[in-house]
Every structure is written in C-alpha cells, then in structure tokens.
Image (cartoon, rainbow, N blue to C red; front, side, top):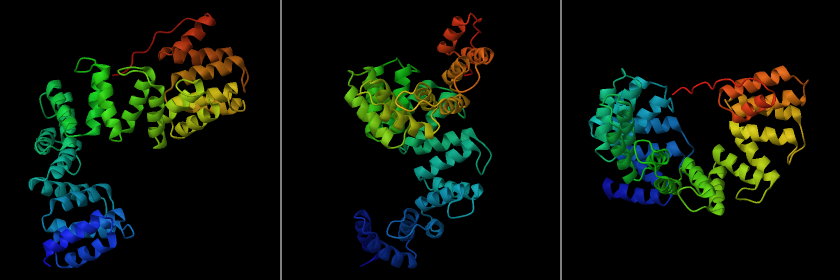
Length: 380
C-alpha cells in the first residue's frame, strides 16, 4: 500500500474517531517524511485525540510539515508562535509563517497575514497591505476575511470608506454561512444602520445565527420572541432560547432568564430560579445582574434581606458603569439601610446618576426638590 492509500485509510480512522489506529499510520508515514502525516500528528497532539495533549510535540510535527511547504501547517505553527503555545512566543516568526502560507495562496494564511498587518504584529502596521491580503482571502470565499475587509471599508482604513462595499462583504459572508456575519447584519437591520430598519429581517438573520450556535444571536432571538418584535410573540420559544444560551454560560442570557423568573414575564414567577440565574450572571461581572440581585437582597424578595450584601452588589454594579445601581446606592443612603442615613450623600449619588441619564435618579431629585443636572453627552 503506497502512502496515498495509507493516508486515505488513516483519514477513515480519524473520521471515525479511531484515533489510535490513525496515529499508528500517521506516525509511520511521518517518519518517512510525508508532510500530511506530520501535520495530522500535530492535530492529534494539539487536540488530545487518542493521546495526551502535548503542544510541544504538536509544534514539532507542524514545524516538520511547514518546512516541506505545507501551508496548513505553517498557519497552525504561526498561531502557536503568535500565542506562545507549545513554543516561545515570537510574533516575528508567526508573521513569517503566515506570510509563507499566504504567498502559497492559502486563504487562512492570507487572512492571518492581514490580521498581522492590521494590528502591526511582527511588522509595521500597514492597512493597505492588510486590505490587500484580506481581499485575496475574501476572493477565495473566506468569510472571516470578508468581515475583516468590511470593517476596513466601514472606517476607511487602507481603503476608501464605503458603507456600500462594507455591506456587500458582510452579505457575502452571510451567503457563505458565517454566523458572525448574520449577527452583524442582523444588528444593522435592527438599528437601521446603513440599511432600512427592518426588525423582521433582523430576527430572521439572528435566528439563522442562533441555530448555528451564536450565543449573542440566541439572546437576541429570545428577546424578540418575548417582545413580539419582528416576529409573533412567543414566550415559550423566547424562554427556550434564553435557556440554551444561559446553559452555555452567556451572562446576558442568564440575566434575561433571571428577569423572566423574577417578574413572571414569559415564565411562572420563581424567585429561587431568578436568584440562581442572577448569581450566575453576576459571577461573570454582568452589571445588570449585580444590580437586580442587589435589589432582591435589599428588599428581601425571594432571599433573606441583607443590606450589606445589597450594598456590596450595588457597588460592584456601579463600578462597572451601571448608573441605576448608583441611584440605588443613593436610595440606601437616603433610607439609612445598613449605614447611617445621609441625605447629602444620597443627593450626591442621585445627581451623579442623573447626569448619566438615569430617569429613576431624576425622579428622586424631583421628590427632594433638588435641581436636575444636565445630562452629560455620551462619547461616540
């Protein structure tokens, strides 16, 4: 059996997750210098398929294949050098490997070389070169390159700014099945940026992305089902999508699921479930979840009332830029919850919150007959 036939046999074993059988063939062929076998051994050791994960060994085999001009190996090894995985970090070496693969016409090599030029990693920053290499990869139907090039066109880096061209590349990436592109185009249609606002198109794009595993899209679809925006309201489906994304660790989904249980919107009210999901999102630093969980502790809603916990959670949320949490801290000072009452401190917090557009803080200042400050314009 020649090496070509042996590679086919090894690939069958690989495809069927018969890792040890595949490894034996690849090892034998690698010793003979067959670059495809060397590359696939690198994959086995990179991913721990049938062997203990060993990134140094993976790098060794990728290096052997790359030395024989295999672009796939050059890209994988380049990523190792860029990240410092299995080898000492060396962005210059990474750049050279990506360039080697790009010159050989490999789309992933061209994409990564574009990234290196755009970021100035291992070379001087050069948007013209970045755009050129992204275009080469996009011409080979690489969706990530289409999105990277769309970004350059949207801001006018290395190319003449053109929202139309940017949109064309995003749409091309969508046609190539990119969930990220579907997510981006969905946002454009939802907010009417560069296209006519169309919630229905946004929903359909997000639904396609959600089915492909985009957690952000799953949250968006859940919210649109809950609100009946762009689609007929269906709280059962909305809750389903929240649960899918929440179970995979998305903090926005965890927060949305908690809100549904907390207020009985689309789900039977369940404070235990609400507190559980707020906590999971709060553990990831989600500012809204921190604030709502604090509210539960402040008011003893479904949990034992604890002003100290509430104050700490509000403070954590406020530190992450949640101005409603700043307002809530003002409430605690005004009412003397867990600390001496201080009208002066409450007004200070309300004023700071109101400056950033918090309507609840504005209302509290009105109740106290305190002048309402001008809202600070948001930075673009």
